[in-house]
Length: 258
Image 1 (cartoon, helix red, strand yellow):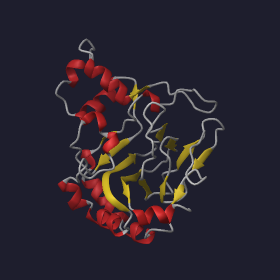
Image 2 (spheres, rainbow, N blue to C red):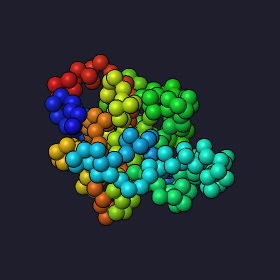
Image 3 (spheres, helix red, strand yellow):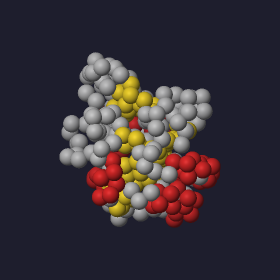
Image 4 (cartoon, rainbow, N blue to C red):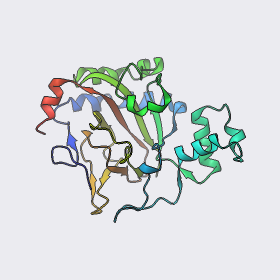
């Protein structure tokens, strides 16, 4: 089953926003990313329910463990041979270490422009709120043109998490979903998915029952993140940007008939 929005696999916002201005500041965004490359961490999908398990006709089964599950297992098992190595270790360091020392796999790497300050167990549920995801000082400085552009579009009442998903040379974004039947919210997330590299990052939504890949060919979109999604590998590196928040009333009216 492919979850749809307005009877479509995704909705495009390209005609409603200043796309030319966004593409104009692409070099500035790329420079900001390059300056903060060392702040990246391995992306996780938050649980086995979001990891391909072969349960549908065209849903493959990933032969490797999901990274966040493996990290959690090592941290909580005092008898695990790697437990001593991850005690009192920063999360991003632990993730990279576990990727090297186990058969666990992530879906790429992330650079988050915020510092989460809420309760760990509801981190993902809070991603749309700026009070839980204040922008880091370095992000305010280095990504000021992106932030200015976002505010200028007048889309959000509140902007929470801003995260860049990076794929290196020849690296795909592995198939995954953000929610499963155990943790899906009552309302779908409100967010922008921004692709500054449409010629490199071939992002798609997978219908697990029919096998159809619905490629996203627009640059600024929204989709139902209960869907299985990923991107094809490409010889060149690229990143996409996800901006979570609360859409304002005017924007909701604009997109209601898209």
